Length: 183
Image (cartoon, rainbow, N blue to C red; front, side, top):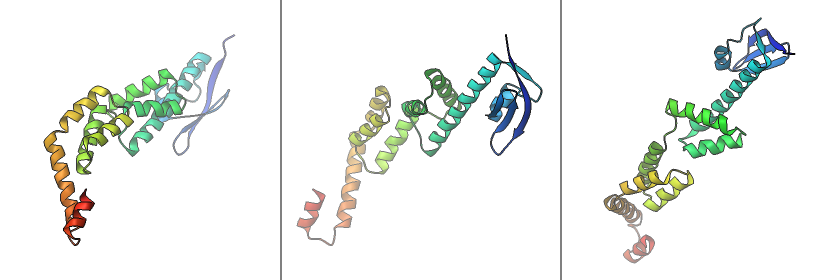
């Protein structure tokens, strides 16, 4: 025997819609309400309502992923690991990643380029850059491409700037002490 779930009442609190059914109370995002046209008096089969619940679960995970991304740029692998921690299924992770990519919120090449610029600004060498990129589990091809941008001339400029800063800080010390500190 097929059972149906009837929507008895739909109200909105601060962030969610509260949906009262003959089967209990549920909280849904606006996206889920609109996508499935959840209105008072409408009925859904068990299978249809199960699909609604799946949509809502993906919506919750997507919002958590967006919040995670909002603090700093993340690599695709970092997001996958985060979603695994939130107990997302493989299928859910694929759907969420596709959505995030469509919005342009993740781009490993752009992240790697930003790290490259940051390392130069902060006077860090190519080895530190490589370690950071590997920590973020960026694809090896992208890592190699970015490391090629870190030319000998750029590295020399970074070292020169770093040495000049060290020399400027120690001008009040004798030359011998300055050299020891720089070494």
